[in-house]
Image (cartoon, rainbow, N blue to C red; front, side, top):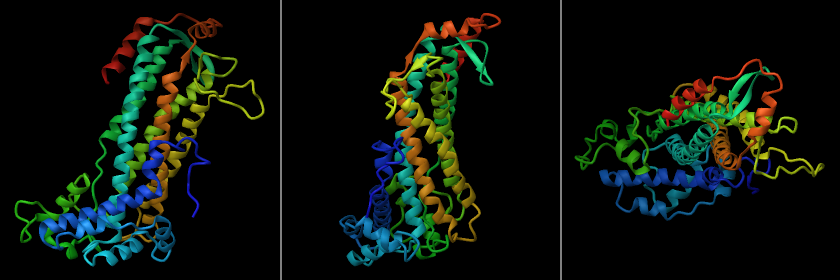
Length: 379
């Protein structure tokens, strides 16, 4: 089976987000969900001790699972078949969506943490640019034309404000485990006891849902969310917002780096196959390409909210790949943005020269500086 290495998506190829969202990582997340369920059930005495260890020792083949998944429309079914050859108690009382949705949240948690770390670095770099260039005169441009004077520090502060908003939105995400059984009633998982923790042996340990979520390091849901896709929709929307905030920076850098403008330059080589003299803004191009794609992929989870009854036929399955694209494109864009801003070269003399081409009046540098400080205070 051929692998997806990002040949046509260089913005995420070789990044940490790519590794965290590859097929093997999704398989490991599904196995983690099965192990967590068994471990929680062991603590409550509903499966024999050692069940989780037996599941953990299994080594399913990801390519084989992918092929066999065609027969059931999801990869959990063949995975469970393999696990039950190891122990009949695997997947006790659960349904495929419990495992795959929980696995999706595990993968998402890892990627979101990576993105947040990169955004912290991005905000630091932007804050430095805003401070350093608070008095660096340049032309503001509206509708593609020079408008009035501004400072590059204020432009960087504007970029920073957008990234801070995106970071706050990502941090606020609630990524819960999913556990509901065949139709969300938890009937085969202990019913009321799975929710309240009132099962024999469960006293003092918490409910099955709480134990399961704790094993996974995810939030415990108040109710099963298999039919309420707002968790996935909000995640995809937050990723689209993050990609957009980074894409705004990249778009401005592309325009400022044009040969006839020359106010900034990337550290990347930006090679051309036909014109060796060119220095293309390659990093910005990668980031912008991601920002243009993520909103389109995020539309699919938004539409999947219209799934029918307790499990959608097609809408749920349609979420998987677009969500992965949102995660790895945004992860790639964030990692690339750190590289872009770490090496971005600012050309103040060119900024001033361009600004003096015909701006109507000088800028109030004090007002611009005050606006910069307001943004910096939000960090």
